[in-house]
Length: 249
Image (cartoon, rainbow, N blue to C red; front, side, top):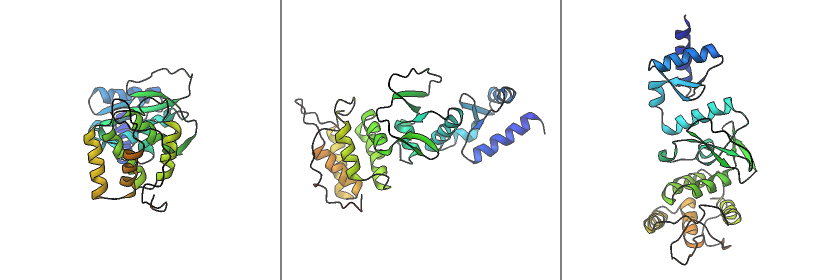
């Protein structure tokens, strides 16, 4: 078996595991790049390869999960955040948010941008965890950061999946939001009235704990600005307005 045949076999095995193949030596990397140049393989991130056709047919979430695992193998000290951390936690991240992998860095740390699709962000909450075998921001911080970074419609899917899968309780999220919302960019992101109506309608149609939580957010964590434009978070401590027991959260 020649070098190319061996690498193709390894790429096939990696694809079956929804993983990327990490080049182990300079010569192996050179051979893999030849396969990339020939159109048989692809290099999603520097040093990690996949069969092109297999990679392009992967589910976007599985593709991002494969990228995260490969990046972790190449850079085991990196901590994932935002939508990448959400993927690691098993949350249902909308495909539109999976165009890059997100890394958290400590405040004041210099970051050398190594790849266009790897974005760095300041690590606001130093309490991190490990999920799916990779270091990432804790679940409450992950949900909060995602809501600050995206619009209400896309953020709705992320927080819904966190609550629906019992990865965090309603009360824990509410407490975390109230403690961290002040002075955070994006925490007063405007919410379109149509999104509010959609969330409230979904609550009536399907009164799950996740929907009841969102109803609470809409009614109690909405910031009443002078412009009368509601936003995601604000200040309040009324925690008893949702008729959902802790065992359901």
